[in-house]
Length: 611
Image (tube, rainbow, N blue to C red; front, top):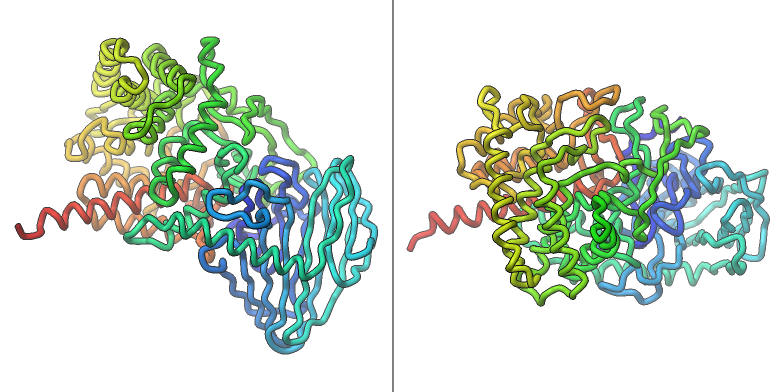
């Protein structure tokens, strides 16, 4: 059973797959060649599921950071024998710069350890366990390294020093003196493919330098945000880029599966897929921390993935694989104990079969962000977006599972109705570009009917707030979106009352926000959601409460780890980050809230400025 804190890990990314590295130099999570591939190392989920560790043999003081404007990790060990520096990266394609980053990533994990002072014995332990630990491969020495055969993968480890092989583990202790370095690499190939040659140390050094340069070139192109928390916004933008599958533009919700929302419980889901639900907020974040090319690529992926379903009068699917796959059927890996015994460990996600009518609004809001002042979309995209608007008009009265994918009976979730309103509102604006002006009267009628229904059935006079579902009393943090999407002005008394109600009744003692407190059909209690806490900061900023907004923002941002990564949730009892990691939605919330606070302060300054 793995017990290491989730926040102890740092992310490596090549815009195709992801690795997680612990503070003491162990790669405990690696999936190749895609985010959703079976793992090669998964000690994150079970002590016997594989890892690759490089660290001094004696205890050391450890510090780490990402090299400036990159996701290349540098870990420094200062011990009684001297100091060594470990640099880790997933290699980008040779010469990839800017927007091309990830286009030809080779699927190579690079690791280089350098002694900067003293004489330090360094231990290397290599224990690959492909297919989530099911395979204990046969490891054999070859010229320049090791070859591991087993299952669908052939793993080529490049090393200039000999490792002792014992069963499915290879290890050694090697002493480095000041000025000496050791370069290692791991490449995953297919069992039926050609044998991959080992890389020499000089090549590894070049690839590391080239990868750093690639990340910095992307960061320079995307340094558009100027304002408070600029470094955090920049880092969050890089995290979103690292969680992007470059061949399609899809952005995964997180790099991991089955890190729990409730420690020891069964709220353990696979987040290595992309959700339509996240679209509009993701595009807002990309517009702030990235640029139009990332926005367009992500929207184009979702439009392609979803397009054919509306043609057959089938509900839009809420999520897809990074290549556009639709069948994401869920299964449990019973041989894995789970992080801190949180079982089952799942791959796949049966939420793909759920019904969520909010996605019509998310897609049209995203299209509005991209096309409102741009060239018209192509003919197929226009037809698709018209179909999305028609579906919102047709289905808004129907119940669904809602934003949070509650695994129980369908209900009339306010957020779902709200996003159908958003979809029709944006479609009306887009109608001239879509060649759909004839549909505007019908869309307008349905938009106004949705508005009336929300104001009549979504507002609870006794609670003094908009609530999770129609004619109910339970609060839900998703109602904070009402001013964000323009349904009601931010100075509307009902908006202010709702924001205050969420702050008063959905926050814990730390000031972090729960999604909801109502029963959801699953045992156990989940933690507070960092996204929802950033939503509260965002909503407070919109209502003119700048000082409280900044305090809430600082509270949420303080749960980033030492290299600026945010988990999904925070355990209310312990204050420990939990859930899949790093969580794209948390970083999206940070970016959007920072922008909202900045814009509120800027507007206030303009109001009080003389003449």
